[in-house]
Image 1 (cartoon, one colour):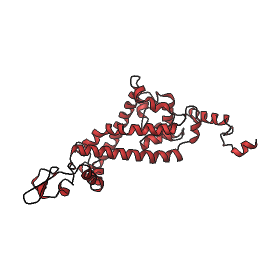
Image 2: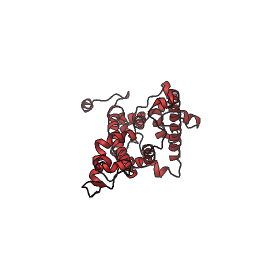
Image 3: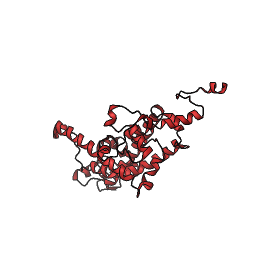
Image 4: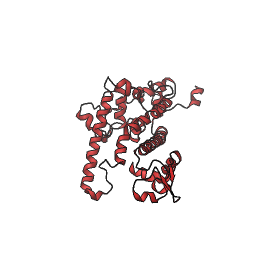
Length: 288
């Protein structure tokens, strides 16, 4: 996030805050001005408002400005991520035949969009303390590999992935606890497939239920998460299957569990596909 602010402050945010919260200037005897938004160092008083506070009452290191900037960046970023990747996934990855599944609701796509857009601000607020701590130098992030070496770079990456996957597993599992499920997580389970504001979660929600690949033993695939939405108490993991295996909540995908079978059954009843699942041209259907 600090890298994003370093780029966006001079490009956009300095002008935005100068317009919304201009620095209050005070004339001096020699005709120069002092700004209330200046740094308190002596050198700051010899600069113009645009040089010391960038023309705003909130300098770049103001905590309120940092909070506002982080929320703005995450809101715009998450919204763009959602619309771009969800649209791509919906039109090029998601099996549209699933829209005939008995559990696929009327106007479901529209409901999903509304639900996701309502969730984004709350997600941003929950991540704000972590981004703010990073921006204010309270994290262990570093930019020079030489500071700790390539070995620690590799080890810390693996440790982070394990820790991240473990935390997401238990957060997800706790969301299914009866005391909180209906208030927090139940709306998410209204659908057998949905688009969510994260690239990986978009992938595992919109992908085809392809089973039998050797990677399924290790990677939490769309097939795993499809089973989670069907059976609720299995496959809580995010990226890998090790946590589900260790805590005995893993359910391996099987071709016969694919919800596409139920969707094709409905399509056959409507005369849209034949017994093998091949589309029936509508003009041929009319001729019959």
